Image (cartoon, rainbow, N blue to C red; front, side):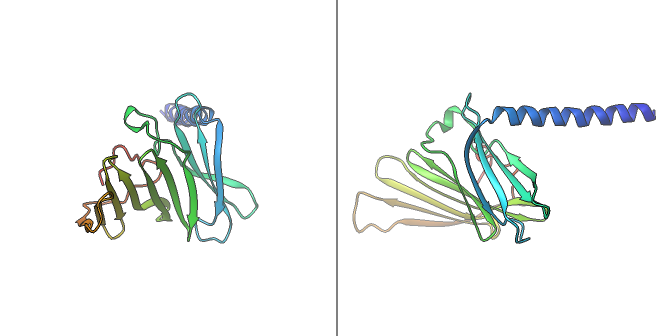
Length: 192
């Protein structure tokens, strides 16, 4: 029985290691990299974006620098901007920011933009905010600003081609029990 347990453990480790290698081999095109402190240890950490040249998916990976100067992979996400028929409007590569220990991922779209804010807390990167701006192409501009920590979303719709019309602003309480985490967050399936 003990040998069976050891065999299962070894197979599980090998399987996860080989899956990690497959993911790493897919994303071969370097897109961008930034440095900044993400875990409040006053040591520069690194966030990299790489692209899968075959299908256009992106992988965003976070590395913490250790005191000996080496970098340790903390987490990655390959579904933040995955290719699908619904998301073919991407114009530019994602760009990253680190501002006050918050990782901000920005995506420019054909008629707008999205950005996602993640903070390292409770041992993982939790999404604390989401902003988007989009146009319907017919003169209406919609902005959403969601603070997931306070569970408040503000939505503004304005007509761009008409003067002296006040934008329509609505505030909504978000029903989120647990903040999304970076590793599993997928904007296509998350309900704001």
